[in-house]
Length: 241
Image 1 (cartoon, rainbow, N blue to C red):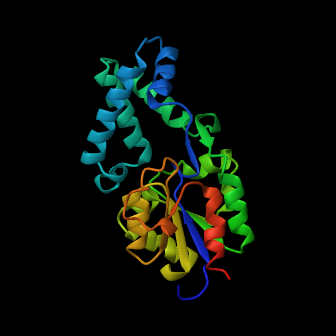
Image 2 (image 1 turned 180 degrees about the vertical axis):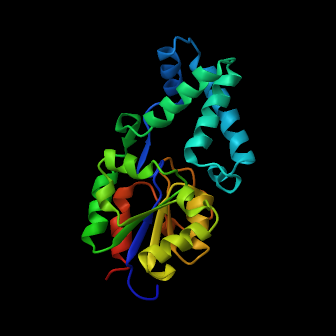
């Protein structure tokens, strides 16, 4: 490493926090409030199909096609329920808007138990912390509601950036925001391609968070893989000495 570590970039979903209930459970709760009785398993399948279709047809929230995060997610929700044979346009729009807003609530998110201490420890090392996430504009409110926002000096979401991981350009925007060279920056995330390979392609010191030990037999160097965020501060301390 050329020079000391100065900045740590963080992925959010499935790194710092996760959805508390399955999408099928959440959507079925909303459907029940509207007087509908749907099966969780059916909604889960419909959601995966709708999400995959919209991701292919309108990548990164359809930004280049005139959409935004809210309109994109509302389309996913409407398509999900339409695949479950819900046809009333007014009802579909109401449920879509309710669910879009519901996912801003902390009740729908679970902060990983190793998260707070790791963030505090990294801050105590004098490091600037920032977020790089394939997320929409709700992220700031979600982090605020979950008690995490104050740890970060800046957030870069794919909706704001107009580009999504694994495109390295989103990391380049984060480096500009923190004013630190790639060689003085680390990144932590749970996805092999979008977090680990993408960040390292720019010379950022990427670490793969592997809570489920999926990559123990991979070609990832052991010093680049951690099983818990508890391990991260000590790894970073190595570059501070």
